[in-house]
Length: 319
Image (cartoon, rainbow, N blue to C red; front, side, top):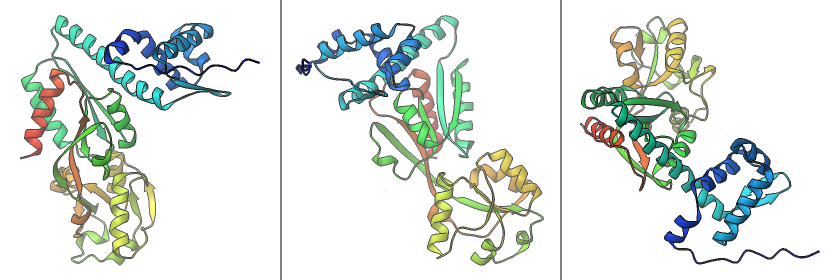
């Protein structure tokens, strides 16, 4: 049996890359990455399996590098493949954005903007910035995607989002390919409904907090980590939890009807406190405050709508 010759590596220049890789090749690379097998990628692209196999082999031969390992269970990207995959997502999304901007211009629209917001983040900053954007740029289409940072950040890197606004992860400055701008720190507040026995107590102790059941954020959330850090500093375990949830409106409704303790970002409950529906407990969580700001792609091209929105939100956030 003949041994397959390894691909001969070529010295590539930017020009040779642009000449060798076509848009259809980028779509194939993404399909292979997302679906994991040549057969599945072929089905998604509406091509035959032999056609995808040949296209991949031809591309690897022309580039002089192996993009995917062929495994018994499918394909896995090589280190070279991971680099191409990362840029393929960005390039195709930029092309879609260009198509959208041309379409918007011809239809008299003001562009498109997709914002990522971490689950349970305060929305005042985003809301104020969107209102200001709509005032300056008529007919702009804004899409808000609410999810965990662990999924929002990869989506941003791939070009599916223009930026992320809200609570910044602790390790955000160590992440590759992104820019992080911090505007201010936001404190967590511990709250109860007005009928809760702790609502009228002058001095709340750590033992008081542990005596009652909690409406707790999920264990993989930033807020849970902040609370865990607070109790750890006090030498205590986490309190008893009746419900885990990050859905803001649902949490408030549950809190209104039950004697639970819950944690909310300060800005998100200002109206509830002013209306007398909930009471803030006198507990200092300032050491566990979160940085609030924006995360954007480094070196990426931003649409005019995204650039305008970032200028607006910087002005609001840094006041």
